[in-house]
Image (cartoon, rainbow, N blue to C red; front, top):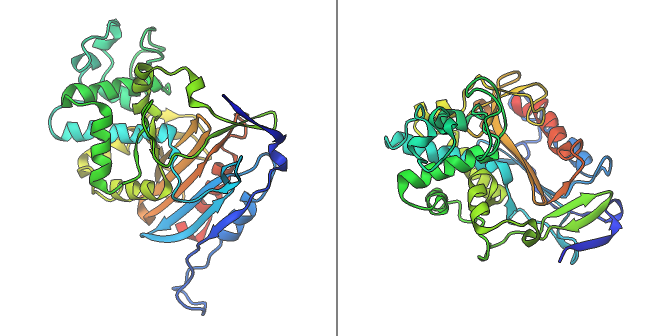
Length: 362
């Protein structure tokens, strides 16, 4: 049963649940002191109510130090339970970079060749394009795959088309070369990295710590009932490599730190992941067009290169960005998804702009 909150979301009170901002080590202004020119701006932003409200977590770290942390709103609107940084969220399309890493780890072992056509690893595919679409093209969204049962949108390698089914095929590739379920391979990696609260969501299983997700339509808040979404175990298993992983800001910070500092992939395979000439016209991640690598967007412009991804759906919204040169990690997670596509990433874009124009990237 779907739960409808019988009031406009604009009338629901929100709370700032925690404040945790790092400050300078001394009170004297000198050339070595870091001046915080972003916290007040983010604080002010997330308390605004137009064009929508913010309900979630913002975590910013640099060199392993927390620079900004906020818990704002509710994990459960029915009980008015405050949201916390330890709550688990659906990370949606941020799952794709995890799938890409699992592929690259098999590349390092010699089990996958990125230049091979997908039929090499998923021989049961009936479509003739399986003989020409490569693993590399599935990874960087240049395959043209729209649906497993449909023709390609364009000749592989000639354009960009965002594709969840492409990542479903990559999940099958991982299963083919490892002889294990995607879920098992991914969960094993999380455990090895110390991401103790991160896991693949499974139907009819206990999914620990996952908070409620909500839709907003025409100003009304509605709790998402996953069982009403008509996933079968098979269709959900195909979706997991594209958007089915559960995590929280703390664990995602571990992921970003270890991924971008050489603790998960060898340097040569990492460089394949984060360098690309495939153009993605989505402006959520950047004020201009970004490139799409292996499960990540890549901003190559000023002030510095940064890497990450956005995700949305099933009542959740998030944006995750890492600036390698500054060891700066920005994680924004919400459990309310406004179905107006023009404003779904409103706060994520604004916070990105604040941070990228702050002293954190000077």
